[in-house]
Length: 154
Image 1 (cartoon, helix red, strand yellow):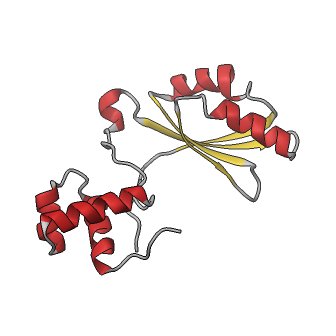
Image 2 (tube, one colour):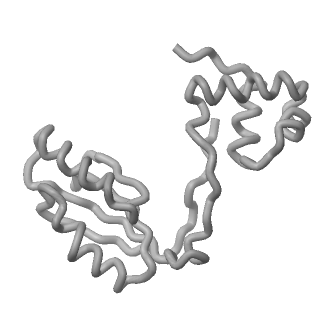
């Protein structure tokens, strides 16, 4: 069981969430602890899974992936085997940013980045509807990204 978080751990998490490129010295100063203490605490936060990873946030339009598409997927059967087959297959598609099993009108909700509508039309016809167990999809083209990947509030 991971250890409990105190106010300094929470401060370090918040600071890193908003500025992942901070040096240990900068982070320590902002958190009000020594560099050694900060390094030890940060390492513990990684080791105990509070920090899952660190990566750059690439601007989608700059790399030709300016269109954001949300897709609701309904499977033909609601069995553990059909869910597992779909999940194995969807995990192989590099254009799928997120895939969530949901309750409600859909079985899964996908977040997909593509270059444009034509690009999505091609992958929809060639790959999405060919996934195991897919009975129906409903596509939502995002017109404006109001809040995307906001930091967690804790």
